[in-house]
Length: 163
Image (cartoon, rainbow, N blue to C red; front, top):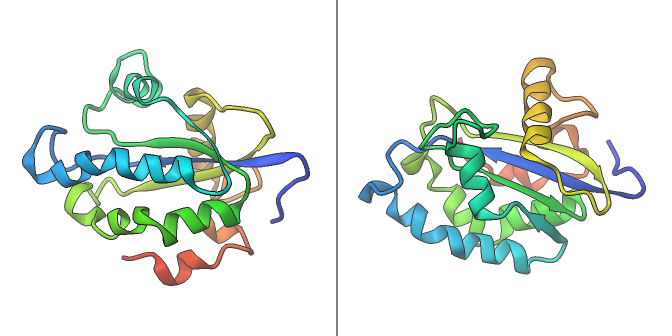
């Protein structure tokens, strides 16, 4: 699949922590969030990321769109292209944290990831992101919602992803 003209790439990354946010066993993760998010915001191709306070509401509040799980750890962001997102994920400080996901995340719940195209200038809502995620979960990868494997140009995930 190729990037449609006039579109950027949105991504939703979902995970459930093994332990509560204040548990010492996840403190390296918690303490590293600002580092990773700052690196994303400085990365070539970064467009937008959901505000942390809004994300916390969406994750943990009963009126949020993510099931009110107090251990939810997610990101919703927009990137200029698959190549730019792929570079950030696999070739920056983010990769060091990704490699430690088994320490912090409930792998039975599995990390989850969905991407989709958005018109340039569009900032997706969490309701939109969860609808795309659910579509991917129900129908598998389509042009409506997809993972790395749906993108022929994406290659780094094949060699740099773990487990």
